[in-house]
Structure formats: C-alpha cells, structure tokens
Length: 149
Image (cartoon, rainbow, N blue to C red; front, top):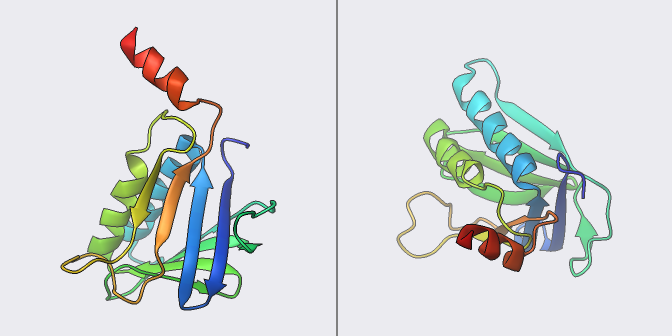
C-alpha cells in the first residue's frame, strides 16, 4: 500500500453497517492534520480526501472518498453517495483528529474502534461504527522486537 493512500471498505446500508478506514500511519496523520486545518479555517466547511480503488474483501464495496464536514453536532459517521461522511462540531472534529494523529510507525493491523456506547459524549448514537486501521510493511513482531533493542 502506498504510504499516502487511504482505503475505505464498507458493508451495509447508508445508516448501518461496518466501515474500515485503512492507511499508513503517515496517511492517517495526514487526515488528522487536514481535519485540524478544517477546524481552524473559518471559511472552509468541508474537506474531501480521495480514497484508493481496491479489492474491499471482506467488505462488500470500497468507498471513493472521505468527506469531513463542520456542523453543530456530535461526531456522526455515515455513508453518502459512495463516500465515508463524517460531520461534527469544531470541538468534536478536533477530538476525532487527535485519534488519527497519534498513529505513529506502528505495526500493520493496529487499529482503533470509533463507535457509540452508552455515556459516550463525542459520538452520535446514530453513527455507523468505524474501525481505523494501519496498513504498512511493519508486522507486529518486528515492531515489538525493535522496542526491545
């Protein structure tokens, strides 16, 4: 996988299903920085990042883009027009960005779940659960062994 490319796999319907946003740590951090730029730009209301065309298995389809939009809501994750769509207030989008910015040169398969649970103060309960996962050439054993050096 090219270190600047993201892949978005999806199974389900517009309002429910399973989503996976994958990329190298560098690509995920790029998205986080783009969201921070969106939050701080008074005139910009949306940010769009193109995604790769790939074999989405085990998901049913790939999505063509990630769209992030400022609103006055909690983080809401859904699928619209073949795009992963994330909306939220400036504060909640900044929190979402922080979840992407702390991916470093970690192992392939390292991931984070973004979904609503009872008492969650950041995520809209109607959001589709999202998994953000690292795809790179570093496997977990290489990563653990490098920490022991």
